[in-house]
Length: 140
Image (cartoon, rainbow, N blue to C red):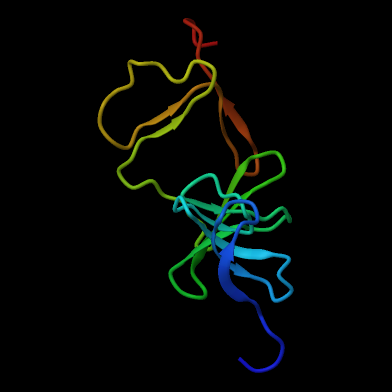
């Protein structure tokens, strides 16, 4: 490379020990493969096989088909997952969707694929939001 140094690969003991891409000034590890095999981008202490860390309010991870078709993933400051598909759809092909809390979904879930099990209220919205909940025995 010509010009200013962009960094180097080397063994580091900052955070978790391993092979890392270290900034030219030696102060920041951009990517780390730990001795235990975990990979971290933006973190020196990845605690899963692959962890991307970024605290700014922007997408942390992108999966791309090409430069114009992609899906971005972000975890916000509240810990919520945001999936932004450039094509506008998020599909679960032949899979069941479980949205569980508290009761961790009942054990009497029907078998097969394509089921949506939602514990709590389901809100379907467009311009005029409507709410769906559990009906009483008299359907009131």
